[in-house]
Length: 234
Image 1 (tube, rainbow, N blue to C red):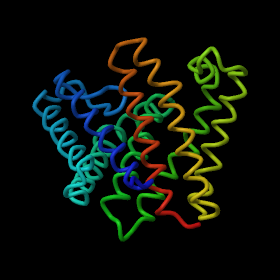
Image 2: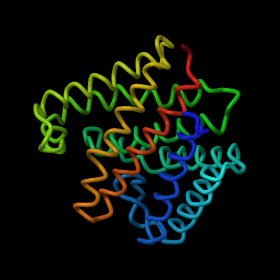
Image 3: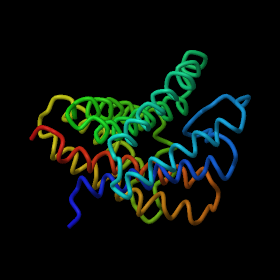
Image 4: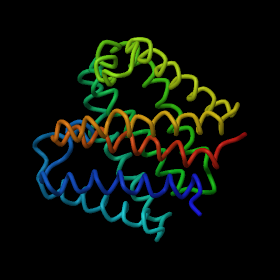
């Protein structure tokens, strides 16, 4: 029987393997997530993709999970230091760079939950720190957020603000350890619903790669939330 933890592990593995497959297919890094300088050789993108595919397969198959998750945590930390830190210094007001950086931090936190099982606070804090930033970005870029909500859902602006508030509240709960498991459970529902009602239809309709990357980011966020359900204070 699948538990929230095993579901999270498998979902994270699928997302990581998908990122890696994208690297291999396009013979390059993913601009919207990995933000690598264009001058980097394709060989590094292939290596990056191979690590992600291999680690994702390990997580899906429940084999060498700790080693694979630690490799992913280290790789994503490298992205943050080598790719995102210089970009944020050069363009501190670029919302896209802030979004990508904290998506990577959150996914690294999810991987750390599996890679460092004796220290769940490491992954929980990394994941939780990203959430208030996402909430703030929802407010700053409310017009964009409202524009991507499916047309059949009413009150787009309301839901843009509401989900931003939900991000921030969940981040505070996880960091403070107050109703943290409830917060993680609600986050998993929110991100999971986005996978189904927002990102998957957009990816299928658009048919181009960045939408599939966004879908897998949402899946990774849902995975991290599921992993946190059993690894957070009550």
